[in-house]
Length: 120
Image 1 (cartoon, one colour):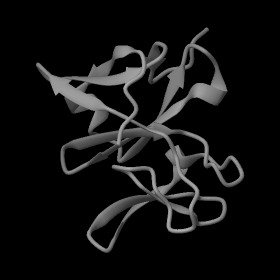
Image 2 (cartoon, rainbow, N blue to C red):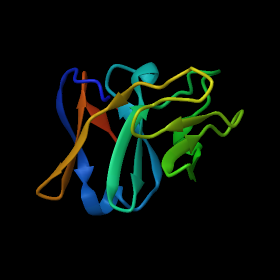
Image 3 (cartoon, one colour):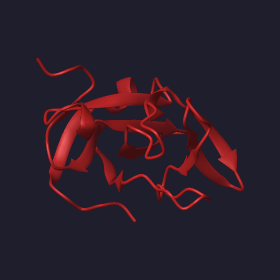
Image 4 (cartoon, rainbow, N blue to C red):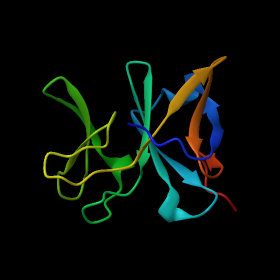
C-alpha cells in the first residue's frame, strides 16, 4: 500500500512525463529522498529511487512483467520490485507513494517538493 505522507506535489504534464518509462524525480530535501516515477501504458507509479539492497539507481532500471505484475529491475544487481507495492520476493522492499493525474497534470503524495530537474 502506498504511503500517505505529505501533500500532493505537482511533478509535471502527463504527456511529457509519459515519454519515459522510468525517470528520476529530484527531491528538494536532497538525493536520499529522490523518487523514481514509472509510466507504463499510461499508468504512473512512484517509489524510492535508490534500491534498498545496495543503493542502485532504480530510475535507470528496466520495467518487466513477472507473473502479471510490473517490476522495476535494479541495474546493479537485478533485484526486482513490484511497482505497485514495492515488494521483493526476497523480503526487502521499496517505499511506494500514491500518484494521481488531474487535468493532465501528474501529482505524487510526498513529504517535499519534487522536480524532474535538480534543485539549485
